[in-house]
Length: 423
Image (cartoon, rainbow, N blue to C red; front, side, top):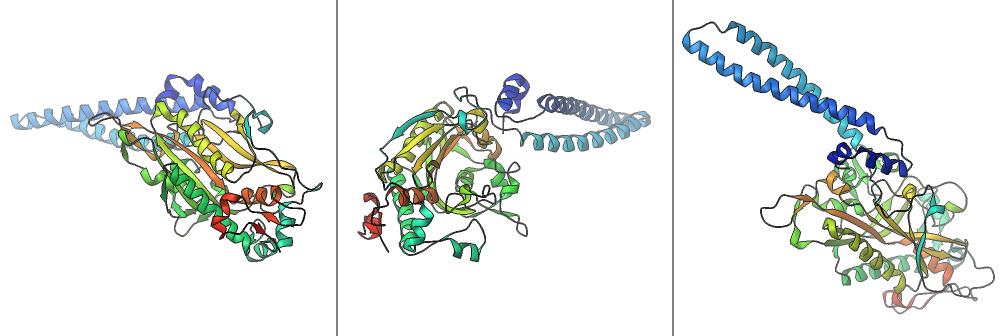
């Protein structure tokens, strides 16, 4: 969440930042409620101070044998009012805290203004798109012909938006996870094995709740959520912690399945593996010093791109405009690979700097040195990478005229030396 002091001190900055994202939030109404709460706090403090003073005066009068009835009556009224204000304060603080959770992060000054993906500038490209047959097949046709992608089984077992990989398709998926984790370990990330169910506090900490609750899979009996990304459990490892600033940046990576209720509209967007309810992903998370977080964002981006380069997949990097940012991000890059079968670019990674937005929600702080005042860390995360669309692009970019799929050289050792997938 945003620093409440920032909203008080510079409401115009917050107002402009929220508006640039296309979000309608009543900043003036929020500040008015906040001011009423602060006035109530002052009144309560004065009442409590007076209660302490009167209590001493009553005690002194009783010792002298003097009449203390008037002060005792005042004490009674005072105590009643304190009870009222304490209740009002609790209710008001809960209301304000709830409103705060609905304020999105403010875009960094370098983020271009825009309202949709058409306003997202391209930052760079890597690799060449290979020459392919005149009409390259889409991944679902290739996968079904080779017997490695079973759409009907996924629908039978779970419904629309679920798929089954079979044989070499499943092996390719496992190989990708191992390659990605090994690359990130070499980049200095600590590998974690994390829970796939998290509590409400964890989802609030990274910004999924309350904003996106309708898109989450909720286990109501236990009040646990299936994770939409490993970002949630990994970031929350340090919830309520005070880190040693000398150890920053800290970085971790984890594989997980991801569960998302919303799966797009019908048509090409939901065809095959392009948009599904459950998918595998390797995630990277970094906790860093505030003044270093934008340097770290560029490093994070390069770490994700290194996986695509190892897989020989051409890609482009897009900088998201203000209106296309996720709820928690201050700045974000998307990495996209080319899918010739559907003739479009597909997002396979988002690399975001949240600044201290998540850290405030999850109360993750650090000390620069022993005895120093704790400060909020900056958190970053990036996909390294999301598997379904990587599989899509491998199928479509590496198809051969004879109907085989060439396995990228970096994956061959993970596939037991196998160089092609064929019927």
